[in-house]
Length: 244
Image (cartoon, rainbow, N blue to C red; front, side):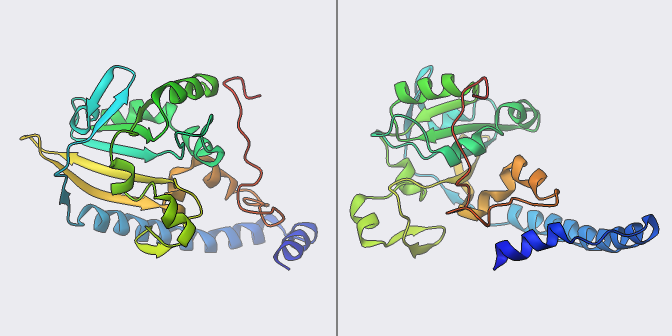
């Protein structure tokens, strides 16, 4: 029914005079401004959430060898980690995480200017990460966590029996995760003494805001246009650095 309604809406969409168009657009602008104010307030509240100290030592495998969680910050105090679905058994990363990762390259230089380092972390071995990264034309830093509990500790990976039971702790509740790896974003802060704190994590639709392409799609008449698909993002495909 939703698909039929959207198709009908496009085919029979109202067309009005410029005066009426401007009136409707101005009325909607008031809603957009209210949403922006609410989003700003939500961001302020997020920044005021309590932190938890990271007590465990994690060592990752990266392009420059072994690096601790502290090393990943480089010379900055804030770290964003994208939990990229890529199990040790897979030969390529999740296509949906790849859709998100296509947004990373261009923004990292800007994040660095604001005292933020951004990396991706997966359980697949570094050799597979590097090969896939080259194929996709990505330049962001990508680390393997396969020898650590990092993914499990931050709700990004799950034991096979949890998946089988359809009960794992993900997105702050017990749920059927469907896979041994899931997507997410975690944020950490390192103080002047070198102590590290976990400040925030988001999963599932919680990382929707981090996908630039989706937000441009939200501007066009058909929107994300996924109603006819078997599942959300069924249209997403892997490509290479040439867009093929």
